[in-house]
Length: 177
Image 1: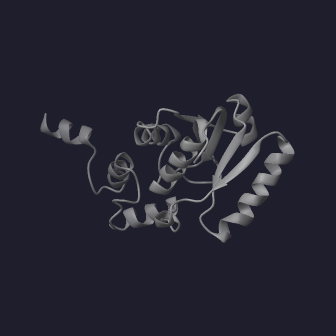
Image 2 (image 1 turned 30 degrees about the vertical axis):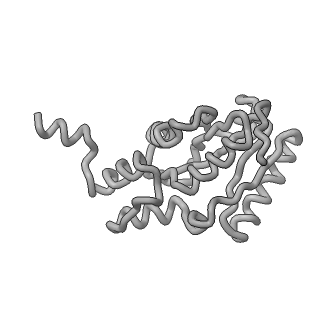
């Protein structure tokens, strides 16, 4: 039986562009293990993002609304500084395949060097999400493929709208007026 650590705050950082069902699966797993989970939307100037940080935060909040111990924030800078600011003792990282491990291991060791008391916990997603990543989802959506089941419904709606496949509700209402 899983023991929830009510005294532990876990930080789940990432760019989440877009937030996928694989990410949601990891948030749910972390929420079952820790008293509080903070999904931290990172600003990464090295990446060209489809969604603004504000859009990503909003979409993730909508996607995790039923998880009472989950908070969503935006941050820029080092993950260890964000963890310190929010008093997190744990960083959550997802590992889909062996290919993820080398990069994640290097990051975990650097974060340990910067903040020795901060633990990194690797979680594996459900088997159905092991192939899933944000880049693949964007490619499928961009080229007209079906993304239902790959991302939470609020993300699906906005992602399709970004690629002109479905207009957002606000645009439909405006046109009717």
